[in-house]
Every structure is written in structure tokens, then in C-alpha cells.
Image (cartoon, rainbow, N blue to C red):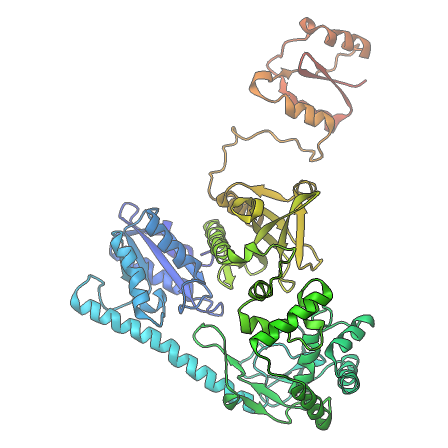
Length: 621
């Protein structure tokens, strides 16, 4: 809401004593620069005409209206209404489509009914009907909901058709190019604008992206992989040799059987580009498409591998494939367990004759089910995986609360993957994670945070779980440095040593994050100047400062004058201080002890004595 003009902000409305209302704003993409301001202007005019005072603002910037799970503003609005925290009687929305483009119109009606049941009216300010519950308004409102949903469905179909057409022309439509390949930006005249680096995007709709071979060193690695496979016929051997030679992958990780297999099966290296293997429409989950609907553009990339070599490699891969029954898969895994003594993903993927771990997961649901069927109990506990959905929901609530506090303080937040990752003011990143309790014999317990290595650097707000991960212990806040680590671990002693802050409640965590990022705490009013604790200019806590801070309570307050007598000697001063009845009373010009310390820091050295629990300072001669 920081971008909304002052003329349309809630405190600028005409009537301050009218009916209290809240406004809800939403825009689909961040490129709609003035959408929020335009909506706020129409809502402000509607509130002025109907004698309404806007006291709250809920907004979702850059969020689609198809789902509610990624809309922190609407979720907070519904939560406030259901919990009775709503201090308003009206909710003002620009139109029906801003409330949502849910494909099931009953979902849109449900959220409005939640407000209506709590005695809160939802008004659509730009619509030509009044949402008064009459038959005519209900009919028009439902038609508008159908139109909003149909608009998204038609737009999705048009976008997918356009993507398929561009794919047939040999352009790449999103995703990573792959190892030893680069993305090249092409303008409308089919002229190259140069290669795009990781994270770069095209900035003109008339520009497109093609794929071309990358750096020569990586191209040589791809050719060696194909040649070596024809000799050894094992991805595991090739991955081990590459790791021994310290050859990095495109993501900087180690080579595995899966990464080598992806290179051997990638048609991009022979010049073909395939699109629509998987698709995701209307923000639903990804689905694997049958080969009949795949779109393959041939000879659109400069080939790296000869076609005959590529066909020979894939023929070997297909011929060695053996269709096993579920019982045969478990029997082979039991044999590996007897031979190795334990089972892990690395052992399964590295054993010739065993299907890969992903195949076991597809057949049996998860590796935990596989372990249970073969009677294997791993040393590591997987109890947390059973309650993962519960903690994922708690993470979403925590991210929602953090986002609302930041917005209340004037910041802008956008979310990715629901509310697990927040981006504040377009530059600061916050990851919402869970710190798992890990306990071992003869070792102090510690907590582990799983972190995606591709996440940008910023802050991590984590829910720290208690023993055996059964309940919430507290909440911690830590910053990420330039080192990319998939797992971050710390004990309680390490937490204190590393300065990782802990908080008892989610609200305290949210306010601490807001204070660090925005620079102020919006939930509590700023103290008056007279109530503030006097500060010492020198930020370095010296011994004198610590002693002075210890005796700053009202019970031990002390004011004294430090006017240097012309004939004062150190010995006489010490004797006077040794006798508390000789300590002079403070005149009207006396200063508190902390002010004296600040003054002496500026003017010179001083001597601090503590006698009978009181600090006394005199200037050093």
C-alpha cells in the first residue's frame, strides 16, 4: 500500500465518524504498475459516497485469483472475520473478478458467505448492481463469477496454444537449457541479442529465446559421456569418474546416475527441442502428457552429438530395461540389504540390477513403505515425515502472519509456493522453514533446517520443534550468508554463540523481522522521549558502561556533580569515597551517572569506584 496516493489513503477520507470498512485489493502480476492505485481510487470514491471510513487494507500484489492458498491478504481477511478480530462491518472490493477467479464459483460464494454470516457486507464498488441479496443482484453476481472463471480458462487455452506454436518454430519456452547449453535472445528480426545468464529474462514480448551450445569445456564433457557410455555402459561409473576429476554439473553439485542418464536421454544434444511433456493449467498440479501430444521441433539447435551415437546409446538403455514385478523388486532389495548391511538412496542408485529410488517410490508410494515391506529399520528416524503436512500448514500460517505485520508497517510482500517464501519490497527474501529436533546418544541435542540450495540469500524464520518433533518449542530467526548449504544445524550453545535470536510467539518473531527489515515496530507505539532509556553514545560496552547500566534502576539512582576542584588529589578523593558519609549531595546542576560517563568519554579519562553498591566517578588527574 506504499504506492497508493495520499489522496486515496484511508486516513484521508472525508468522514472519520462513519461506518467502518475494510478494502481488499488484488492485482495478478507485478507489471500492472497502477492497478492497485486505480482500485483504491474507485473504492475511496465509493466509501465517500456511502459515508464509510476505511480502517483496514488487505492486498495481494502479483497473485493469481485462481486459488486462495497463495493470497495472504484474502486469507488474513477471512481469518480475521472468523476469529472475530474484524473491527469493520463492510468489505469493499473493486469488482467480482478481484475477489477471485475461482473455477468453482461456489468457492467464491463461500468466502463471501463467511463474511455475511459474521455480519459483514461485501460490496463490489465498480459493479452496476448493489450486493443487497435480492434475486436480481444474486443472478448478476453469479453470472459475473462465471464470467471471471471463464476468462481465466479461455486465457489459459490461448496462452497454451501460443506456446505450442512458438515451440514448433524452435523457440524455448521457459526452463533451464541443460548442461553445455545456453539461452540466446533473438529479436523480432531474428537477430541475436546475446546469451542470457542464469536468472536473466527477456524484456520485450517480441523477443524470443533459442538454445545453442555452451562453453567448449562443457561440450567436450557431453561428448566424452556419450563415448564413455558406449564403452562401460554404466552411468554410475561415469558419474564416479567425473566426480574424481572434480567436473562440476550445471548447478555445481556432484554427478549422480540420474544426472548422467538425463544427459544420455536429452534430445537437445542432437538438435531437437521437445515441448509439452508435462503441463500445468489453471494453477493445478503438473500432469505427464502422453507422447502423442508432445511437440518436437527438429534441427532447431546446433547438434553436439552425432545422431547415430545418440540412437545407439538409447538403444542400449532400452534393451537393459527389465520389467520387474513388485515382489521381484523387493526380493532384489533384500539381497542388497544382506550384502551391504544397510540401505540408502546412494546404495540403491549405485547397485547394478536394482531399479532406481524413484521407481521404488512410484511403485510403493515412498521409501519408508519399501523399508517396512523388507523389514528394514533405518537408524535415522522418519517420524517427522508423517506429520509433515501439519507443519507445512503451520508454516503457511507463520508466513501469513509475518506478511501481514510487514504490510502493516508499510512494506510490500510477494509470496512463492504459498507463503513458504516471502519477498519484501522486491529485494529482501524470507524463507519459512522448520527446525527439526535431532537427538543422539552421548551428544547434546541439536536442530537441523533443510534449505533449498537455490534459494536466494536473506533471512530464515524457522519453527523450532521440541523433543522428538512433537510440538513447538519456540521460533528462531537467522540470516543466510554467501555459503550455500543444504542443511543448517545448530545446538542451543551454538545458537547463543552465533547470535541466533529466539522468540516464544509467532507475533514476536513477526515484529522482530519487521523491525529489522522496515526499521520500526508497527504493533507497539513508540515510547515518549521521557520514557526512553537513556543511551550511551559509545556503542562498545566497556566495563564502566556495564557497571553503570547495572545500577540504573530507580532504587539505586544516583546524581552527582563532577566539577573538578583545583586542588583535588587522587588520594584525598579515594579517602572521601571510602567514607560514604562524606559523599557530597547533588546540586541542582547535577547530571545522572550515564550522562557523566558520556561526558567523561568526550573530555578525558575518569576513575570509577563502587562503594556500598553505588557507582561513583571522578575525573582522573
